Every structure is written in C-alpha cells, then in structure tokens.
Length: 317
Image (cartoon, rainbow, N blue to C red; front, top):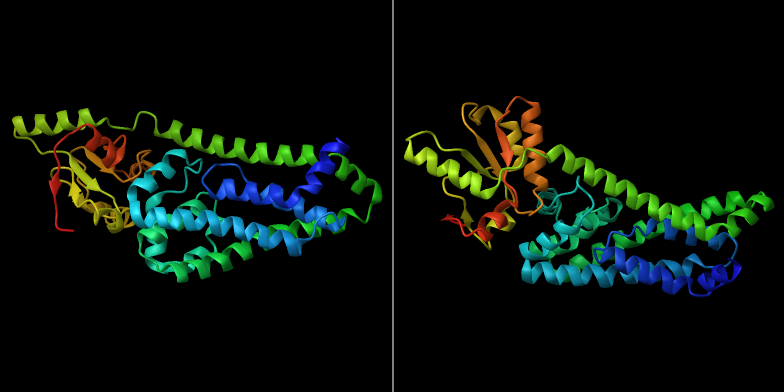
C-alpha cells in the first residue's frame, strides 16, 4: 500500500491532470473525490495547491475548448452524443441551452458545480456562437473557482485531521481505499438516479411507428389527430427547421404554464432533441401530475423519427 501511495504522490499532478481531463471530456468518472484528496495531501506537504490548481484549470480549458469548437461546428449532433452517455437524468440539453441563451457566457462561472451541466455548457456555448475569447475568460474563471473550492475543502479537512496524529496516520494508510470508495459511491449514486428515472419512464414512451399509425388512423377515420408538441430550443431548430407533421413548437416551461391549452380529449405527444428523451420525459411526467393524463414522450425524440424515415414538415427558421 505504501509503495502504491508513494507512486501516487510522485505522479499526483499527472494523475490530477488526466483524471480531470477525462471527466470534463464526458466520461462519467467524478474528479471531486480526487481533488478533495489532493487538498488533504497538501496538508501533509506532499502536494502543493499552488501547483495543483493550474494543472486542473489547464485540463478543464483543454477539454472545454475542444467541446466548444465541436459544438460550434456540429451543434446538435455533438449534444446528442453527450446526451446518450450522460448519467445525469436531471440534466438535459434544453435546460442548459435555456440558461446559456438567458445568461450567456456567465453560465460558465457556475456550470462545473452542476453534474452533467458542466459537460453540456461548453458545446452549447459554441453552438450559441459565444466568441471564443469571451468563452475562454469565463471558462478559466469558472474552472479556478470550481477547483479552488474542492482543493481548499480538502485542505481544511486535512488541517483538522492533523490535530490528531493517530487519525492522520490512519487516513494516510487508507487514502487510496477512501478515494476509490468515494469515486465508486458517486458513480453508483448517479447510476441509481438514472435507473430510477428510466423506471419512471417505463410504459410512458410512444414508439415512432405507433405515432405514425395513430396519425394515419385519425386521418382515415376523420378523427382529431394526436396533439404533437415540439419542445426543441431555437438553437436546435435553426440548423434543422423541420418538425413532425402538424406539430406545434412550444418550450417546456411555457407548455407547463399554459397547460390549459393542451387538449384533454385526445393523445398528446411531446418530443425533444435528446435521443434519450430527457426533456420530453420530464415534461410528460410534470403534465401528468397536473392532470394531463394522455401525454407521452416520443421514443428517440426527433432523431428517432428521422431515423425511421417518416414524413416531416419544414417551417420558417
């Protein structure tokens, strides 16, 4: 154990850089436990926060810049990839887009403190055409604030632990195990939240072929067609101004506020950009809680409908 711990101390800065770079790159491995451990190690003078901080910030800037330019050039396609691998069911593309649209680059000052939102913010800033110098400035400041908070929290804990030499010795001995437990614990918690979200969603989803059949049946029998709502943010509509036949575009927050306009006597179908239906599923659940019981999210969202090759309508961007 001491040999492994010694190797970690020697390569602490490299480990910090790689770990943070991987997490900010979209792989759901939490770096907060590692930063807390680094801060605690600084109390024993085995690592210096003055060196660890710029290492973490550099990793953040490199990863965030890559996502920024990918979002600027590929937009929705990049967000769809991130959405598929996100473990944060509560974080959705539309929510991040709305915040960036309202607050601009200021969003980057606190983005890293919100799991999932941290990874989504840079590509959406690129998609929203925030200038790179402005993006870089706010991203650096936000990264410094985020890294400093956890490093100094770890240092504070380390300073408290040093008051008891026996406890600090035990802490050093089991340092690696504690880091592993914290990392695994965070991952398990996020997986649990994701699975609980998917469980709540089970049975609600409507398959694209089912919706097409419902639309055809309504047309053939001269009945009201399903009420279809496009929940996409304007940033997603601009590059692809197409909607499902007969769909109306209403934002998630506006739809919930104006729920009295939603018909109760026919099926309501909602869809968004994210292929895992994060936004549409949450909206459907919220609407059910306020009495709109015949609402269902479209499986795969707009992308699932397009992949199936079903008809679409073009609207004015």
